[in-house]
Amino acid sequence: MPAKPEVVLDDKKIGRALKRIAHEILERNSGAESLAIIGILTRGAVLARRVAELINALEEVEVPVGLMDISLYRDDVHSKLDQPVIQRTDVLFPVVDRNVILIDDVLFTGRTVRAALDQIIDFGRPRSIQLAVLVDRGHRELPIKADYVGANIPTNVSDQVVVEVAEKDGRDQVHVIKGKPAGKRTSGKRKQKSGRSGKRARTDRKGGVR
Image (cartoon, rainbow, N blue to C red; front, side, top):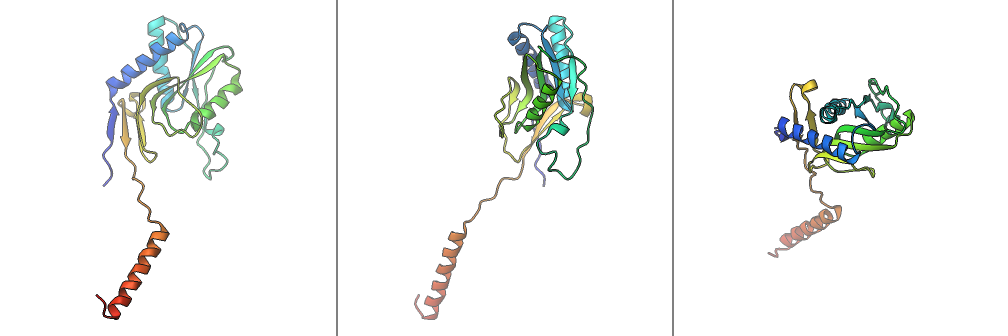
């Protein structure tokens, strides 16, 4: 029987997390004039638009928002048999000398973010690139850390963290599906020892020793 998903963020918690991220971005960058926001498709792009709207409401500054598909920049693109499904990348503004806020839904190994950084640099040299994520679930494989985090959620590597947004899924929610725990391994040495003991016991019984 599959494990029941554990809801870790509901719509209210997501809303509060995004508001806090918007305030932290403005505080760190002394306003919104130098900002540009890029969201990683798919749900990172939705969150990017929301953060831009929150900043606009706070500062009355319309921050440019771009969408990015990092499929061709992944470090495993040449090792996969299936070709990636390419979506559009829309960055219709200069990134040079801007503080670019890169937004994604979940930060896991860091490989998606690494791919996005490479792609942004192909558009020009920003003043800075800052990373904002709704969920940081740990288990990094690269030295990447988020500047703004909505929620830190401890997970096992085998767990799935699912982010749902109203624009795509009809509701705002983050839930965790628990993966299968790793089974205990029995060393071959221990098995071999157990086999020798069994052989000795059979010999004793044959000789009538109890």
